[in-house]
Length: 432
Image (tube, rainbow, N blue to C red):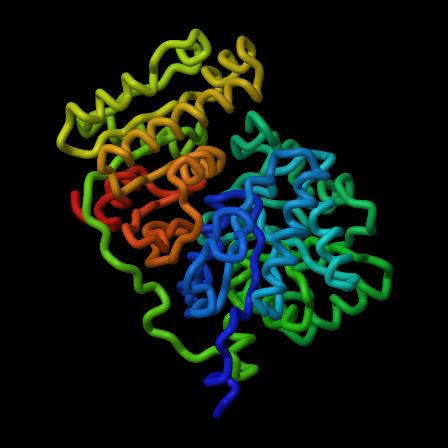
């Protein structure tokens, strides 16, 4: 028997710091030929079926904005479970806009995972050129502008006001942070590997890696084949499947994105306040589709918004949009009155309650916009694991739960997708 025939355990174990980021990473792996399962949190021993049929597993945490010590604890628990499944290499995935604060959580989690794996070096590369995220001389660009001019400077939880990722990561890390610059990456995998060894010899335990194209990400993937841990956005996984093929561990697969069809009513739930999601909501409204806006202030007053939303959905035969998406100024006004954490929590819990109510009434297809919102919704739906299907938009795949009565979900990071994403996602998930 060949090594490929003998391989019956997952090869790649991934830890993502939010739910939409996890599906983004899983999407990248599926598109590059790895059968991928995403778990919601760290599973217990009997919670997930068919893991042994997966080439990669992505554990989706909700650890991006929690206290750093809690994020470290959850990430280490995920690592321990993934190691028990037989995974050979590990990825810590965070947002392509490096969402974090000066105290974490990217640096603390990366350092803790390195220590647990008895390793002394890894790269940090959130680049995702397909969605306009590139890194040049350590600076993160979103489209043609720097990170701190992209709208992320107004993020309610993790405002990004410094585009120099070496500085950002150094403020979060105890270890020395270096730069794996574009000129080494441009010379190919061998030169990149040599530069990694030079950075390690100079005492760096972490290094921001430049990448301005998918070709750079494939180079980085090959150069990092022997690193136990790699950190970055979903793009950093582009080159990893081929490493396993070269090692004779992964066959060429034509069915990696195969998932069962799910019929039933659909809904769109939007909690993100990003520019992209604002545009998607506006497009839905322009088309005259049914929509109901949730007012956080009404939630704070104790009004029965969940019941109102369920009644609204019941009065329409077509999919409806239920949203809390607002402009940055509107978000700031609400946060000024309610506080940042309370405002976000009220919206997340309301959308989660609506999702649970709709499930009880027979809804089977859910399109969800926003990482925190997606986390709250999948927990409310009781989702434990997802099989990852074909891409709907860059960074967003169709997914189907591993259940006897499956649900279809599209979990979208706030900034992803074109203006017609909601309608496109509903169509690809099956039905209207």
